[in-house]
Amino acid sequence: MAIAEFLLFVLTATLGGMFLCGADDLITVFVAPECFNLCSYLLSGYTKKDVRSNEATTKYLLMGGASSSILVHGFSWLYGSSGGEIELQEIVNGLINTQMYNSPGISIALIFITVGIGFKLSPAPSHQWTPDVYEGVRFVR
Image (cartoon, rainbow, N blue to C red; front, side):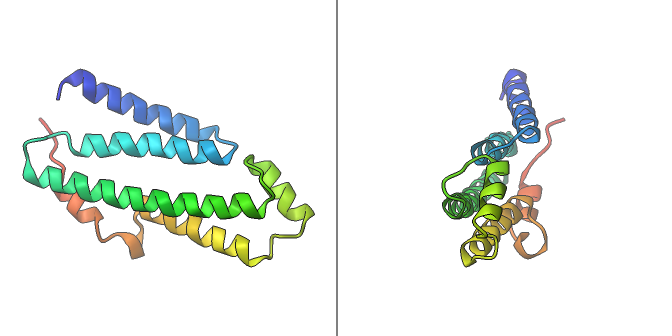
């Protein structure tokens, strides 16, 4: 992979992180980390001819896809419970005004969102795949 592709992936990941800092609706909260994650998947497979790198990238991609689907499912529960709002402030206002913040739908939404973000960050209960990715990624010197 050429240095231009490497820099493109790094800059696109940085752009995703910058968009996440200014996110104020559910769509941006989902798309910005996905932009960052897709570049991370591509950078983890930087050495194409290494079998361990390909295996690590495949595991990273599959777990990332599963966590994204869980996260979107939680967002859909939140969207439905808030009355069809996508802006974060409107969701909070809608939940307070209709007193839906104690409903089981919000609890389900928060559980799915927490699990989806948890698999992306890989803390203690969902960290089984992380060492494989760290071992498979080779740093080019």
